Each structure stands twice: as structure tokens, then as C-alpha cells.
Amino acid sequence: MAIWQTERDICYMYRHACKPAEQIQILAEINNCSEDEIRDILERNGIKPVGMRKVKLRNSQNKPWTVEELVQFQYLEANGMTTSKLSQYFKRSEKAIGCIRSKIRTKQTEAARAAFEIFNREIRGNTA
Image (spheres, rainbow, N blue to C red):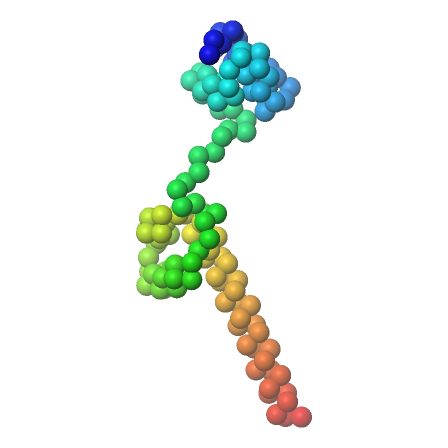
């Protein structure tokens, strides 16, 4: 598509916009091109656009964990596998590994508290 403004003009208008996130759409409409083309122009000129499009990782943290993966995760972690190795093994981001580790620990803590409460109730019941 034909872009009406020069890259310099586009960068100038973007830098001086009151609302940079909205300016990308405006520049795309003015220049009769896509927002991605405007972002590419900005990036080529050393500007990181606000609301930058995110590249999703294949098998990202949004993919649900299977029971088998969780069991395997706990086994590998207990045997000392590092976060980066776990990330490579499961083909997930290190953030996803940290999130699942935190969830597992929370569940383990909740289970331990519940078991402790049951134990205390039984002890109190035997002494009363």
C-alpha cells in the first residue's frame, strides 16, 4: 500500500502524540495502511510502540497442564532440575514454570493445613 507520509513524519507525529497507543491507528488511517506497517516503521526508526504486539510462545503458559505433566514436573523439580531446564523440557516459558510451581506449593500448603486441622480435631475429640 502507498504510505502518504515519510517515515520521519510518522515518527514525529507518533513521538508528539498525546495518546501514543491511539496514534498508531490514526497514522494507519491517514496513510491508508495497516497498524502493523506503522509499527514496523516506528521500530525501524528505533521507536518501541506503546501497546506493542506480543509474540506468543508456542505452548505458552496459557496452555493447561495435564495431570501427567504435573506429576512429571514435581518429580523433575524434586530431583533438582532447574527452571530453565524445566522450561525447555516442557516447552513453556520460565514464567509459566514459576506460576505452576507457585500453584503447586499453594495447593500443598492448603492440603497440609487441612490435614493439620483434621489431626487437631481428632486429638481434641480423643481428650474430651
